[in-house]
Length: 264
Image (cartoon, rainbow, N blue to C red; front, top):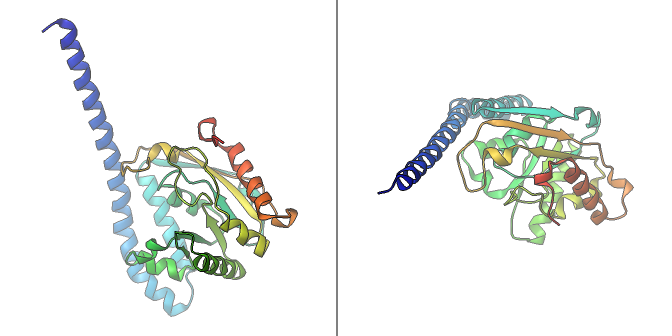
């Protein structure tokens, strides 16, 4: 065996070892996040859900849940930088529209948004024990995938009621996580909601999470997540929901790093 072959073999072994080290480190961060959520979230749900039901108010449970969500991502080594809080309209329920690149987006973004938020999310998540019950009590809105018109209309009605009750709404208008980190196309449903209610839209650009937890992987790479709240867009200023969609998407795209901008 030649010297070059020996060096090549050692280089490959080093690359494999480095890969395993990264994977182990990432899974350790994931385990820390899950440990926080299980040790704090389960007791909070067991105690907080009956308490909230008895007092008829979920505000305290919501604040505790947001603290736990934030504690989990911090335990995983994720630091969050937030800017643009001054853009949130005072005294008016709004619709936060955010790009979506990672499973980390909800626990990173939701706790830093001012006010209590309802969230448009996959219907399947409502079936998770304890968590699903807490989300229903918090007026989270299930969305059934598959394009069923009646189900979509029901989601819009439920979200409109949440806005009418003084809650903000968080929605990821892409409908699912981006496959490659680039901003993808938007669904029309959230913009129908905005045009129907005329609630102010706050575009939100999140970046960094696409490198921390990639689609298809459970491993977390610690780092910095950046959440930018952009200037308010008023639905009343637009004639059609397509025009509103275009304006919101362009605003988010302009705020994202070059490697995350849309390809179209």
